[in-house]
Image 1 (spheres, one colour):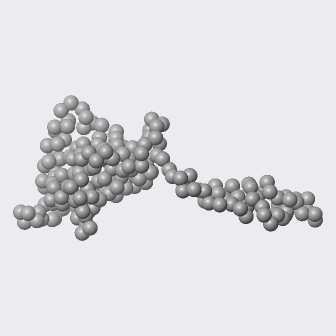
Image 2 (image 1 turned 180 degrees about the horizontal axis):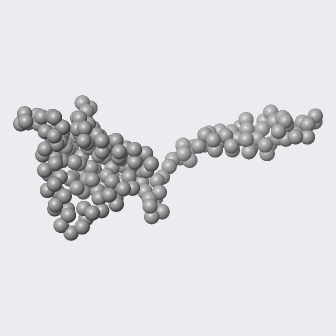
Image 3 (image 1 turned 135 degrees about the vertical axis):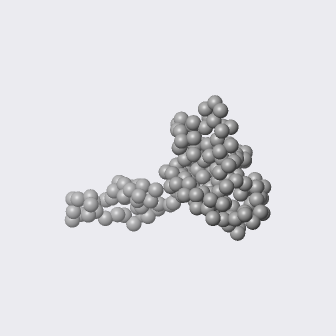
Length: 186
C-alpha cells in the first residue's frame, strides 16, 4: 500500500508541476508552494481493510478458525508449523491457540478446558461451532486450501474408521512422545 500511495503522490505531483523558465523538462520543474502534494492527507483506515476472497469468488468475513493444540507435543508441532506456513498464503484464516501455554484461557476458547483439549483435537469455527477429531482436521485443512487432503475421510465408512484410528492415536500420543499423562502418571 505504501508504494501505491507513493506512486499516487508522484502522479499528482507531476500533474501539478509548472515547468521552470530555465528548463523545458517536467522532471526538473518546480512545484508551486500550495501544490496538491503538500495538501495530501492519509486515506481513512477503511480504505486499507482487506477482505479475503473465497475460491468461488465471493467474499468471506474476517473471522478465523481457532485451532487448539498442545504446544509440548512434537508431533502436533510439526503439523501446526506446516499449517501456519500454509495459512500465511491464505490470509491467516487460522488462529493457533497453545493449550499448554500458561496464559491459555478456556473462557476465550468456547469453554474448552485444558483437560478436555488434551483428550482430542478441537477447532472452533467462525460461527463458534466446536469441531473435534476428524471433522476438526477437515476444517483446519479446508481453511488453508488443503481440503482435498482430508477428502478421503468423507467416503462411506471412513469417518467411523478414522475416528477409531484418531482415538487410538490421541490416547497414546503422550506416551509416544515421551511424556506422561498428569492424571494417571503414565
